[in-house]
Length: 212
Image (cartoon, rainbow, N blue to C red; front, side, top):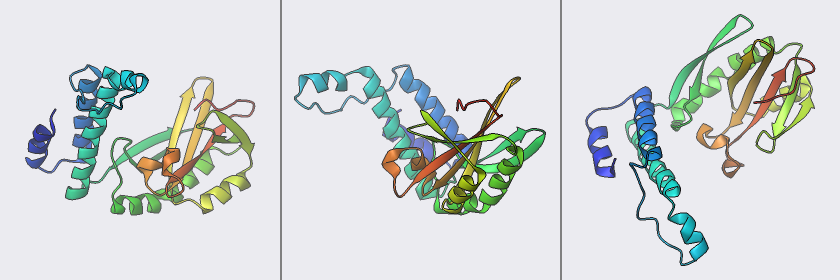
């Protein structure tokens, strides 16, 4: 989809977060299938680098990133929230909580919603992780260090918002508490620090090791 085509579509009405997520998913598939290429990627003059720049994979990736940036600008201009509501069930307990979709950005008002929901998310995690071993992940979740509940409390006190994730099957349960600050869309990447970032606390049954 060209930028002009996208602009025509987005001008037709104000889209919801769910509709923007679907538009992005459709465009991502088109890029993966080679239907979208960023052909104007400049060459550097270095034959090794240019060989990489001319690959379809990079052109597809760059085309999608440009498209996503246009969607994010649409969000800002039309104040379309990036929040979607998730539901998680752990050990028979349920929680509905807000989360910024990984393909969208958070508006200033979204951040306030996330901050308001933090306490209920953390309280839920404390309740369902009681008696479990706790680990702090680092090095992009490649390494884990076992920690105590008191360590979690300290991290909770210096962060702004929270989110949840779980891995579960018949013989394994891992409950991940993400504690973040700044912009959620940048919090998962080192390039966002120090303005944005997050820590991940993994709760697993005693004797198990995190996999998430």
